[in-house]
Every structure is written in structure tokens, then in C-alpha cells.
Image 1 (tube, rainbow, N blue to C red):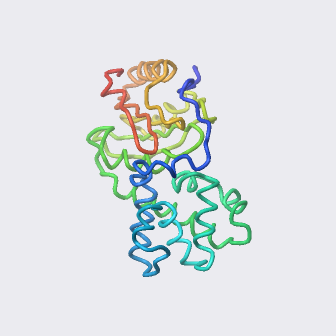
Image 2: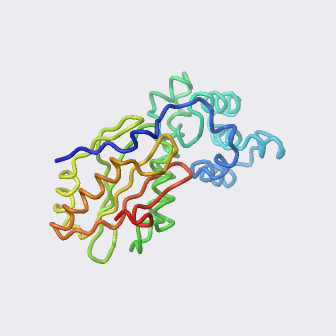
Image 3: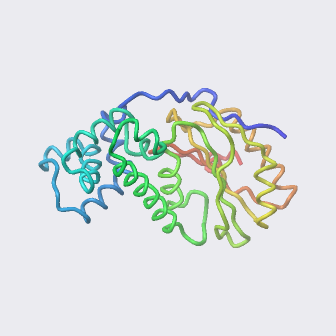
Length: 255
């Protein structure tokens, strides 16, 4: 079987705090929007005046949440986390050990951030329609962007559907780096057969932010489509995801 190595040219080098200077992205970061809604409901504590809060939205949102367990250190910890990881979305994708390298003795903050991230993903997952009309369903795109759009290495998620396009299961496949991911098509199709799935939706992220399919992306997709046809499994779509952009192979008429 062939291996999958998408996005050879997209890159994936991480620049500290790059997104903090791009409000058009940060304001629409799913993680930031979720955090903002949580802290606005859960806390009357205002870390910054309104004009400053708007100017420094990422830091404000994160500081409001941290203030629940560490009010005196909220601003400092928020700034240090964003300086290290660049955005709330990327921070959520880090391990607890990575967070503690920044937070030091503030283990309760690390636990709160990881728990909130898990709750955010569970909330988005619960909002997925029971029946997916297409691979570009808005709820699915938002879920995938929150789940994998800010990851610093490439990963693939596969959504397994029944004959009525209801979601049976989802699973992450492959070992990735910032530039590529290696996936065995047979592992995906083996799981589809185990679940008696009638269709699949593929999705992988491009850490570099470029949603243009690479040649290896296209070759892999056409290869797995051929295998799906032999097994009477429909490849509904293949999506490329970033934190704020996406593209569909079906809309591009690649499949």
C-alpha cells in the first residue's frame, strides 16, 4: 500500500506569537470564541477595560478564564502562554507537560485549560448533525477546525458514515510532522469494514495555512477512491483544514 505524504510545499514552521498580530484571524478563532462565551457567562471579573479587551482579545479571553483559579497571575500567565504558543487554538493542542513548562507551579491552570479544551471539542461534536448532508456541512467544518486546525503537525481524521450518512465513528490516522503525514490506506479501509461503514469523509490539516492540495494529496485521494469503489464504500469528500480556512476536493472536482 502507498503511504500518504500531503503538503510537501506548505511548510509548517512555527513563528511565536505570529497570530497575535492578525486580528482578522484571532477574532474568528473557534477556541477564542468558545472561551469568550464561557468566561462571559461564568465570571463577572473584568481583567481589562473594554477598549483594551477589544484590542487584546486573545489575551483578554485567556486571562478571564485563568482568573477563575489564579486571579492575581491571570494577565501574566495569559501573556506568557500566548508568547510561547502564539494562539489559544495552538495552546489547546499542547500537552499538559508543555503548558507546565510555561505555567511553572500553576498546575491548576494547566488542568483548567485542558479540561476546557476537551469540553469545547465535546460541545462542538454534540452539535454535529446526526445526518451529514455533505462533507462541507458547516457544523462539521467548525468541529474539524477546532479539533485540528491549529495543530502544528499534520494529522488525518476520518469520519465513518452509514448508508443514511449518519456518523458512525471518527478516528485519527497516521504519524505526522509539520510538513507531511504518513497513512496506510488499508488501515482506513480496514476500520471502515469493521464498522460496516458505507461512506467516509477524509480530513487533514495543513499547519502552514495553505489549503491548496499538493500532488501527493491528490494522488492519495484518487488512490483511496479507487479502493473504496472496489469495496462499495463511498468517498464523500476529502477536506484540507486550517484554523480559519478549508477546501473540499469534491468542490474542486478532484473526486
